Amino acid sequence: MKIKLEKTDLEFGDLTLICGENNAERIYIRGSFSDTFSLGFERASEIHSIEVNTFKKIAKNKSFIAKGEQENPLYKEIISLFRQILGGKFIVTDDIEFLPRLSKETIPLKEISHFVCSLCLLDYYIFNMVKIGETLIIDEPELHLHPKNQILMARLLVLLVNASVKVIITTHSDYIVRELSNCIMLDNLSEAQIQSLKKQGYSKEYALPSKRVKAYLVENIKGKNTLREVKITQEQGIFMETFDEPIDSQNENQGLIFEEAMRSNIHKNPKLLGDTK
Image 1 (cartoon, rainbow, N blue to C red):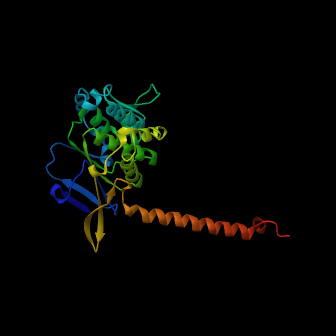
Image 2: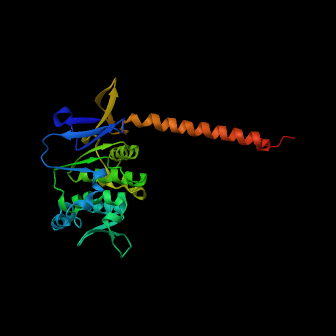
Image 3: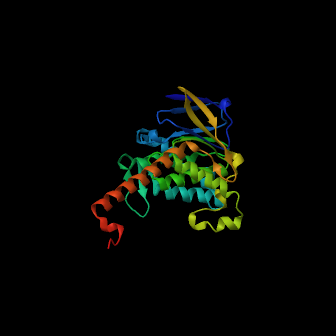
């Protein structure tokens, strides 16, 4: 199923997220943006097919984030967080290789996990290509990522937005949506309050005003795909209720299964009810 979105069809924020209720949906965003870099993580795993010389040329450049890492706390946080997600760094020699953190041996790109491979293009984008004011489009940034890293990926996107990079994502990840909401709510707090959350990985660089964010849900109503804007408030973040029903249902099912298991155990061993004297 293809869903084409023209730039004039909806209002984009500095951060725009689009959720679809059907995994078969493919969302295509078209329109004249000033500068655009589009990245699909499911296709990035084939990055080894790209000429190594292309990456050698790219690697010679330094993005404004890489150049300003030492002087700008925001840029430093972007690089630190991305390294944390990636767990190492890419090296271009005669091939593209990955050097895991705390290791001296590199791994050829074709031999590493889909998770690491999928981040290769984003690595070069952040360190060598990104420009202030351009638009980064990512199709399902959660692909191949553990839930912990999905949360960190959401934070990374917020940092990029705060570094004046416009971001558009399509996602089916509740982890990403909820963490974006956390960053929106973080903007309600004072600097001292944010400092108290340092152990949770937050700093003032992660605060994101709700007015900079737009969210949409693609719904299938009577066989027709409809794009609906989702409510966002500064106090509670993004109201993406499409995730609530399956999560509530799963929690309810877990409770029912647990109750039935307890009944079964009690039937087999009545002593579990306590002293029957």
